[in-house]
Image (cartoon, rainbow, N blue to C red; front, side, top):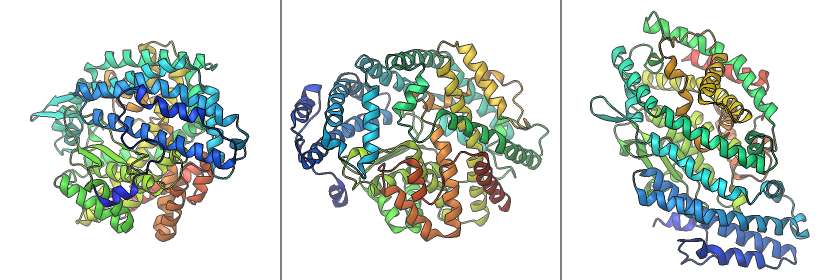
Amino acid sequence: MNSLLEQAKQKRTFVSAELQIKSWDDVRPYFERLNAFVIDSDAAMKTFLAHRSELEAVLEEDMSWRYIKMTCDTTNEDLRNSFNVFVTEIDPEIQKYSNLLDKKCLESPYFQNLSGDYRIMKRALQQRESLFREENVPLIAELQTMEQEYGNITSQMTIEYEGTKTMQQAAVYLKNTDRTVRETVYKLMQERRLQDEDVLNKNLSEMIAKRHQVALNAGFENFRDYKSKSLCRFDYTKEDCFAFHNAIQKSVPPLLSEMHKERKRKLNVDVLRPWDLDVDPEQKEALHPFRNTKDFVAKTIACFTEIKPFYGKCLQLLSDNGYWDLESRVGKAPGGYNNPLYESNVPFIFMNAAGTLHDVETLVHEGGHAIHSIVSADLPLVEFKDLPSEVAELASMSMELISMEHWHIYFSNDEDLKRAKKAQLEGVLSVLPWIAIVDKFQHWLYEHPTHTAEQREAQWLEIVQQFDGEKVVDWSGLEHIRKCMWQKQLHIYEVPFYYIEYGFAQLGAIAIWKHYKENPQQTLEQYEAFMKLGYTQSIPEIYKAAGIEFSFSYEYVKELTDFVYNEIKKL
């Protein structure tokens, strides 16, 4: 093992180094000891919290490795069973004991005496305890198992075109300069998705019903309101989400319409179709930022090193110790993630590289998460390091834009570099309406929990059309595809309501990038300052430490999106 990895790993003082977690009985004694722990002073309270945090780190890392291994190979029944054993047999018991320990804290005057960094933890713990219902424990365990079905289904999606291709590999053809190739592959991909339309609809309907029951059990009218509390959204409300939807709807579609008109003109087509949106508008071959995985890794480490040598060392640490799985393959779950491992204090990066610019965007994004995990590793409690997504995604999405100033490492040709930057910035603008659409859709799903699949698809189309701008892209004849496009968004299935955070963070990232262009050194100091806080301050306070606002106003959104659009025009 790399010595840096050994140095990073949390040392156990409460949990046995020999612990092997095969069943609840293996960890029960630790919870019993914590429950019996006498808290009779401020020092005893902090010792109790440290022991509890150590146990949580061990358990969360054990569960994380089961999840990582399962997503790396969804075809392996043993790996899936291992994960399911944890979520259905071990975790429900953990939740019950955790509730007892939460109560133990809340009833202690020594816990109430805690201040400073404990302020955010205290409100989160109070919230968690107020939401706990024992009858929800088995329901949540069932949901955790059901949520993995999405990955199992979508990981098997392939098309036959010049051999068998995963969806990530097939997407490369959408950049082909031959329009017939693009159309053919696009339709093959969408028709393949449609083969699982009914099963994915059924899967979501069953989860919506179960999630609604969880909300009712906890005394809420709907799952949206329950989940907002469960996610500890103390710093904004559903009305703020609606304000975000409206600000994006007013500010971004007009910009996208202009971009699409320009694309249509450059492609010299009478009608702009969905398969025309990823190809270079000047009909140039797709960008190839790296030759193979080894080259991809080397260039990304060099890019991060140029930003700051420490950042390069962080990625080198992951590479040297196998703490990532980068390549796309059949049987591997879709998407990408950075999984913080609280005992190792070194995260794991998962993605599906297929040789495109999107792969660069993904790895620098997850690399931003990884640096955040490493920078905040010295915080004493898991509770301090367990970040809300609005904060976690600020680090990753900011790194996408900061790193863009150093992409000459991937593209030695100045023309290719400009094309890459333009594509990235166009993606920044394009994703904001998508985020707003997905979030608005989820609000509707759980406000109307008994809706039918047909009503769901009709509502999706209605929301999409609200963000269509001048409707430059022609979807005629593809309505059967468009009505279920939401099924490609894994968050709707696996982590409900975790998506608008990307929108908030994208706005923050644009502001940080703007500052970085003006003053790189100061911006990196503020970037690290907010990351080192973990979750020991409120979200607005953390954004302030980063030198930016936490705002959803139309004026702020328009200022930032106009800035991006003007930067695109410069390219």
